[in-house]
Image (cartoon, rainbow over all chains, first blue to last red):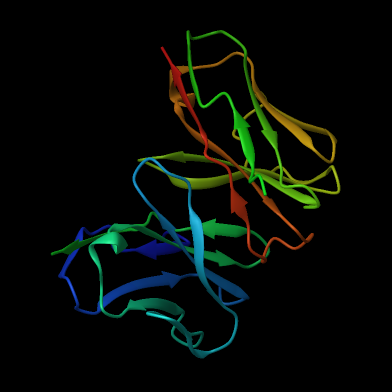
Length: 108
Length: 115
């Protein structure tokens, strides 16, 4: 079992819809959780981080953390074509480990 | 403000050659990270420094890889000798604090191709 798992996708949603990206992790002691966005050929950039159970909202983005079930998700409301990218989940439990990423495609 | 600067942006070399990748972190940041990204393995942390001191190098794949940070504004990642399986994009990232859990700012990456 990989330490941080994401569906590779591609996940395709129509413009204006909600995109839901999921991530599971194996280390119960993990403390911090991050979502990075990476456009093709570019470097990752942080879009959200969450430390506590529950939801955290920032504009169109909502991160959800459930430590009991060991998953973290990212919701993107009102998806735009500019949101088309690969989304990397990263989990810190003594070491920062990235998932393989989920490719999101938002169709106009 | 300038972000993390990496050079070269692209490097093509032949198997057996020495490769040196360079990174200048954001001024004032005291943590620096080297990552490697491939399609097969995704983004992997190779090593990170805090206040110029290597803290965790458990991700360095083998002895052919070495990293240094002689001062707060410069770091190198060296591969000697290089092999085709080292082909990847190498990212450098810096963080304003000494804690890995905090936000990291990535450089543009160096795309390495070893023939």
